[in-house]
Length: 226
Image 1 (tube, rainbow, N blue to C red):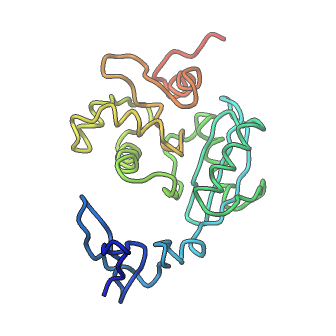
Image 2: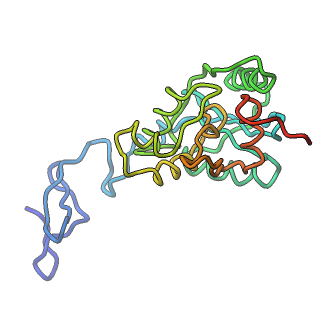
Image 3: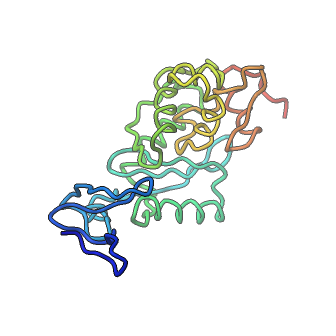
């Protein structure tokens, strides 16, 4: 039987026979739980499964970029990677990935992302071919970003509304904008190619100057004079 509180109501913090009692909408129900979870509901395998990340900073025409990769693939790209930004990003990665990333300038995991980014900024590469680790994105945001990465090639633009239509959510243009803002892999997942349906350039997490530079690199805007 479920343990009762002094008032006769079931306690929701205990498990019995592979079930946990939860309350939804004010009504209790029994939820089957996995043997991989402890009594608090924490996944006991999470720490063992936490991807080990390596990171480095590489120069680019739009400023230093922080790159991080796990054994699954490239997991993060961050603009303006000065010391303060690096510290903030590493703290966030540690919390999100469950382990502190290790600096590894000569990492084999990072060599190919660095090479392809160098080729992109030199105008020699139009399509990245890198394994990506989507750990830092989930749900609707991940769905939008993956649709976008697969179907908006170099030298093309797409509006927020058009992208919402593509993922079957025509009323979610604003949410698409939020998904672009959450992109953990800018440039490689090229959210700079999303613009306002009215013709405006739209926002960008790396700053509008960076967005204009990336669009100019792809021939979508005139090159800045200075």
